[in-house]
Length: 326
Ligand code: GRE
Ligand code: ZN
Image 1: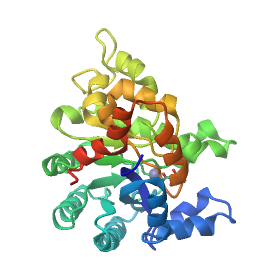
Image 2: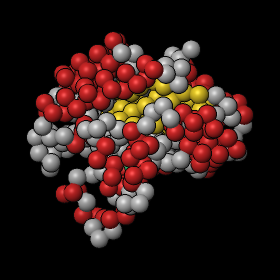
Image 3: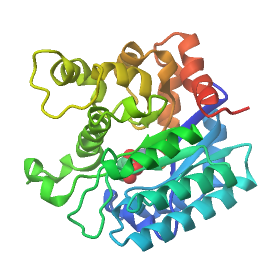
Image 4: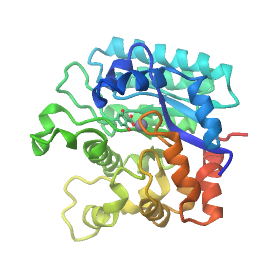
């Protein structure tokens, strides 16, 4: 399919490039490093070869969210956003931008979102899960009350919030001890991010701000696979509510407040499941470059057994509508 739009496509700043090294062997890393730092050469060539017209770029992970010093998080986010704005301005026909946000300070995060969206034309924000505030053992999740005025600003600006994976804290990794391969994209990224998404729902956030739109990568970070059961137990009458503050069945929020992308999960069964749960208006193409190959993403998606009407929506039209692209 030609003219695709992709939304989970990463770059790195000089401050954050080191965060991605741990995922690769020494022989592959120099190549991934170069690809994360490149915007205008190999990246555009490969977009052209894959029929990707436009990519919304975001900083690598965990980057800003793992900076325990709040002022440093504010500075690194701002530098990354300014760098991205400058590069995107060279090719506004091919690139858009998601803001990195210093969630360590909710007011500073809201201000940076306003600055990047209103002044720099960014399309929304991408946040790498919980933030570590003041200590590496701290995990501050986005559903907490200190973030609600931030969410009010997201709703007011009417831009999507991409909830992107990160690994759980070392102290939360008991279940995978001795099996380090379970960390990262093989499992822990999705488990961690799926729980974060459910926290947003259970907190009642979407009752307070019904227009909020959250994007999940990797075809739903495992949430869609279990959404009926989660909804059944977390919101059905006769069950102990155990602190659920959401007013409606979880599945309603999942269908009205979430989009999912195909980033890093090139599986037709999983995409069809997403289409069945959310409708083909809420699924969007992405690759997760350079952690995944654009060619693999596109080669799969272009030929996947879905109808061509859905392919147009998922590959392009849904993103055009959501991000108000011309
Ligand atoms: C990502 O940010 O999407 C990512 C990583 C590391 C490995 C795989 C991956 O940061 O998809
Ligand atoms: Zn990613």
